[in-house]
Length: 106
Length: 266
Image 1 (tube, chains in turn yellow, blue):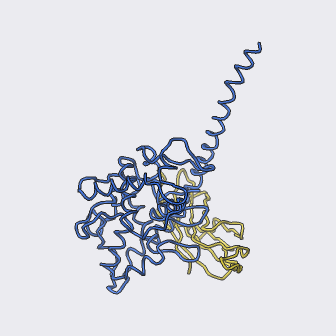
Image 2 (cartoon, chains in turn red, yellow):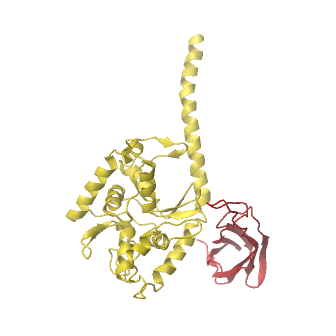
């Protein structure tokens, strides 16, 4: 199920800026715990962002991405009140989706 | 001719030293600005809000009736006025010790269960640190206004001041050893002079914070414990009079500054 994401989406002059903060351990599988045992790999493999029903970003993530990843991107279009959704999928098959309404950037 | 060269050199050398110091501080400031957008502490704030509103404990109650000093359930701006004297417990409390009171009295969670693991680890996040993140986030942008009116509040401040200057331990350290002079630093970290208003304000308004190097959100009590650890002092009891008094001293010195936490640190 994963922990909730923090998403902000704001539109200005026809360009929507989306900022996403994902809560994820992003274990590389190379780190050892206090007992010297390997911590199993556990990381996000795919991130998909949609504006309404249209895909605006499709990314493949790997172990090089930090813990609690932060992702910011822009896309053309977007009107106040429309929806932006972000979904991630990790290597354990866990997934999480969150959605926000676009606000007007001041 | 010679004198001119010597003079130029003499002028240039101290300037060089100064410029590189300034530059590294600038670079750190730039780095802080870059990472402040998308501070993972926001995830802890969300987690804390959920914990605040969820019923728990033997009394199956949420913390929505918890009085942080501005009335039951009033979270907005509460942290900017803490620590303060609470009439119901008859003592001065900081945020962590007050949360402890609320969790034991309102929710019926035994104190030992809460204080066993008050700080997050990579494998297990602490509830109390989540709650701290939520509560302090609700004071962002507000002016620090710790009252020193009640005699016990004044007493706490004085005790805190004594602790700050108290030298002990194998290295004969006090908080003041590192934090009472301007322009000091450990490696690349500037050490704030906590005896001045500006130093205390800069430090206090940016804690609690997310520590990038640990990948965790850290409460103010954790920060104080870490200072004691570096002084080779024993670890204080969670929510003890000692840490509350020290927090009172620092918080009151930071009065009138705009609170800007939860922040993000190296």
